[in-house]
Image 1 (cartoon, rainbow, N blue to C red):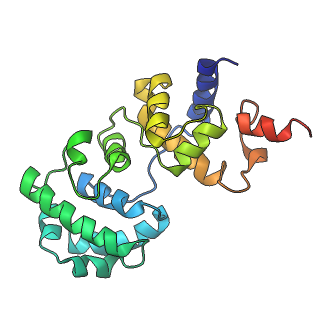
Image 2: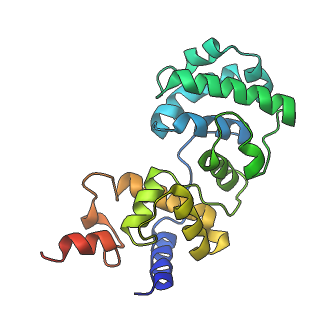
Length: 215
């Protein structure tokens, strides 16, 4: 099977099986999404969704959060992973967002990355999820699933995976494709003991074929 045929087959499957794939993070505006994504690093969306209601009630926008101390922010997010560094990043991010952008989250990947604690993946998530831009955030799920099912081959870095995916996925489908790969990795193509018997693309999956060729 040629590479683009593989992409077409997999995209067709996801379009049918997950037509409304979307983020599992809870948010109401781009600022809340940015905060939630920053909190979600190496942490589950479920845990993030448990802490953000109180956090957003206390600090609904960049201006409010910029005036909070790191210790105040920490008190709200202490149950997430790495709360010390995340509380510092959130404080610094809010201050810079308020000072440089008037509290408005910029609709630009490069500008977003000028904010403390915001890397390429986080910026791409905000762009894809809220602004529906044709960018591909690559987290551990996207990186793993893309390699397993054969969308990438021997990809060494998230950026390499990102560039390969956006080259072969139609631009209008890239934002939702991000969710397809994440959700597939979260619930089916899990890191340990993937549920291949429940997978609708096992017939084209490189990982499945490799591990079942002698069975």
